[in-house]
Each structure stands twice: as structure tokens, then as C-alpha cells.
Length: 308
Length: 304
Image (cartoon, rainbow over all chains, first blue to last red; front, side, top):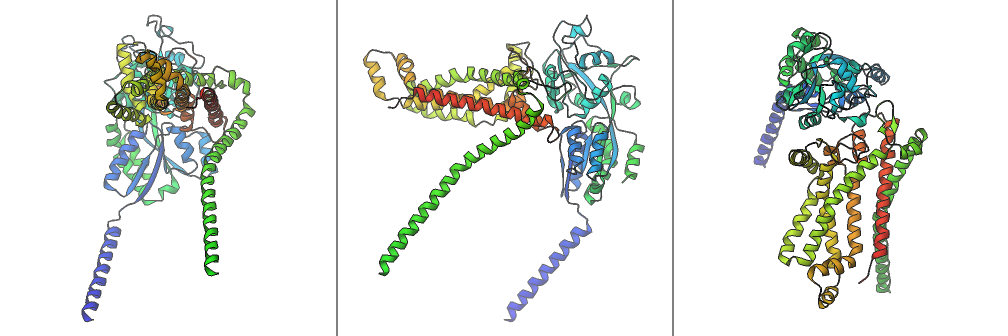
């Protein structure tokens, strides 16, 4: 009888000790946990994904899910409270902001990087050395009469031009149509070009067809630099090739644009979300460059941190 | 007496058990009927909402499909044509190869060979369609572009159709072979007795006798091809156009539905409702093919 009670007492003490130690360990080291939902632009995706990967290395109990529904698709979910953070390759539209307000969603906008929109042609394309904004407008606007390369410039080949571009849900699409065609979401008939929200599909298309012309985020060009040929753009002061310098300085115009993330204020109240956004701004300078986009001056990231 | 009432009680419980099992089995049979009716109901409901805003005539006779940009056009013919084009190419591959394999396996192959070849053919049906899609895009298309069709576009109907054909070969070969094996041996023996050669027996005795089963296999393969989404989404393109050139990009009804469903069309909008109008068209097309197949099978069915 005495033996049994002794064993029992030791067992109870052991259990209590282990539990205390575990509780102390978890609370003292403040391990973050939870799930962060992010969705939106396929252009911003590589940056957010890189941040998420690094963040999850030091915070393995936090799950960060990053989707690629396109800027528009991301906002559709964000403004009804489905996601914590929305990736966007353009500022939020007034109509989207209104929906957020209707649903009681408050948010903070953070500029995270600069992106040049790269216009690309196939590696075997020998005739394009640069293109003007007017030529791009002529090719992509509604009711365009450009069906062959020679329709753009008579000295170019009399071959059909094969067009690739982001789909209608893409922020890249919104931005390109705004600055090249002149009106947002205004473009030539969809049965005359191939659309996809997945920029990798566009890379595949342009890399495969020698008569192809396409456009997407500069980072996707950098990643596939061996398969594609970049087209310098002339907006009136001579052809400019996109690069970190020309995008940052604004020389590569009009196809330089800021990239954003929008964070739900209510989500920001959660410890893990705040830590993630803080981590984002603290490491953006390095990770944005690693991914292939143009980082903003560090002062901008400092300012973002102060908004938290 | 006690044992008599006991026996009667046992009989009643057995009867009740039978009834319960019968009811359960009936319920499982009705599940599929109810599901089909429910799907049809949803399609019709939303499609009616669609046709309140777009005229049925424009939908079924228009040749331009641009619902996502201004100006909007809602002519579904390019999508139907995309489906037909890819399905025809697929059949062009699967019919000869499938039927040929079936004839070989049922009339010519020794039993050992048949036991190896038949399961290998069935493996083709087990490959995930997404894998087929990427196979078409990353292997078939570059191969054809470099060696045969230099003006082929990366996303085109031919590659998608060819790979889809490969996918449906087992459907045709398996079912046709079963139909041919059901033909009584006496038919063949009679033909041999009359001096027929082996290929004459196969083509002029066995196949006509097995025709109903062979046609049924074709109909099944066609239905499968019409409804295939992944291969055409990955390798076929997203350009809804009316073209006879299989080297160009097209869009099938299924690929369009996938594109819209994955996008940002607001719930309840006209763009959203195109999912259901195109879906209804797809449903009706598959229904027509199946009904036709049933009619043909009935007409040519011979009982042995």
C-alpha cells in the first residue's frame, strides 16, 4: 500500500513538473501560431511568397497561404474579409474600396516594391530593336487592325503577330491598358490574343512562338532571360530598357509601377500577422531584390514600419 | 404455443429486414437520379437568368464570344466549335488505334500476350489528365513545332486533341474488344469453313456482329472527350475563335467554364451566369450524344 502511494505521488509530481516546464517554455519563448491568408496579384506573389518562406523558417507554427487569383480576384476576397492581406500590382479601385467600407473592412496600404512591365518577344525575333508607346497602343487597343508585324512597321516581316497578355483579372492587365491603351480594361477582342492569369503560361507562349509578342512583370522576364528578348520602350525620349536603375529613376516610363500589399486592420491586431508584416518591411529590401524586382528606398520601408 | 409465435415473429423480422434493405438500395439508386436532376435544375435556373439579358438567338447563332471585355458578344458557336474540333482530332487518333488494338487483342493475340497488353492499355486511362495536359504542352507541341508544323502556335487544338485521343484509346479498345469477344465462336468457324481469311473474318463477320458494342464504346469516348477540361485548359489555349486550322489556339466550352470559375466574375453578374449557359449547352450536347448512342445501340443490338 505504501509503495503504491509513493509511486503515485512521484508520477503526479512528474506530470505537474513537465506541464509547468512546457507551459513556461511556450509562453516564455512566445512561439507564434496561426494561419495567415494572402491572395492577389501574380506579380506581387513572388515577393510575398519569399517573405512567407523566410518567415515560416523562424516561425514554423504559423501557416502562411499565398494565392494567385490576380489583383482583382484578391481584392474580391479581401473586401469581404476572406483574406488578411491582399497582394496588388495596382492601387485599390474606388469601387473595391467602397465594398470594403460596406463590409466594415478597414485596411492599410503598404508600397513594397517597384516593378517594370516588360514587353518581350521571342529569342529568334531579329527585327524588333525597340517599340514606341504608340505602336503598342496601335497593337493592343480595341478594334485594332494589327494582325501582322508589317501592320506595325512596313519594314517588319509580313508574318502574323501572335499576342500574349495577362487576363482580365490581372492587375498587370489593368495597369497596361491604363497607360498604353489609355482606358483601364479596354483592350482588343479576346479572340485575337491568348490570355492567362499565370505569367508562366505567357512566358511559355512567347518563348515558343517566334512571332510572339507579350507583356508581364519584369521579374518573370529576369527569371526567363535565356528564353526571351526584352523590347526597349520609347515614350518620346528614346528607347529605354527596363532595369533596376531605369525603373527606380522613373526613366522607364510609362511601364514602371508600384506594387502594394493591403493589410486588414482587424487582422493586424493578431500577433502573428503583425509580426509577419513587420518581418516583410524589415526584409523587403533584400528579398525584393532577390526575387528580381526593384526595391524602394529604405526610408519607405521605415515609414511602413511606423504605420504598424 | 410459444414456439409457433416465436417462428412467426422471426418471419416478420426477416420480412422487415428485407424491406429495409430494399428501401436502402432504392435510396442509393435514387441518389444519382436526384443529383442529375439537381444539377440540371441549377443549370436551368441560372441559365434562365442569363437568357433574360441575352437573347437565345444571339447565343446560339453568334460567332463571336467576348463576354469579359467591352463590347460584349455572347455567341457560343466558337466554344462549341472548339469542343468539336478537339474531339474530332481525338477520335481521329483513338478510333483507328483503339479499334485496331481491340481487333488485335480479340482475334489475333495469343492469350499470354493479351494478358500483358490489355492491362497496359488500361494504364493509359489511369494517367491524370493534368499530366496529359502538360505532356501535350511540354513534349508534343515542341516536337511537332520543330519537326512537322513549323507555324504551329504553342497553345493549339492539335496537340490537345492528339493527347486527348491517347487518353480515350482504352475506352474504345476495351469495350470494343469485350463486344467482339461476345460474338459466338461459331460465327468465326462458319466463316473459316467458307474459306475466309483471318482478316476477312475479323472485319466482315466479327465487327458487324459486335457493332452495337463498338458504337457504344465510341459514344462513351466522345462523351468523355467533350467533357474533358484539364488537357484543353493547359494545352489548347484561351482564345475562343472559329477556325478550321488546328494549329491555332482555340477554347472549348469546358476550358471557358474553368477560366471563369477560377477568376473574379462577381457572383450573380452576367459574366458569372455564362458559366451556366455554357454549362447547359455542354450538358445538352452530351445528352444528345448519349441519346443518339443509345438509339444506335438499340437498333443494331443483336442477341446471341
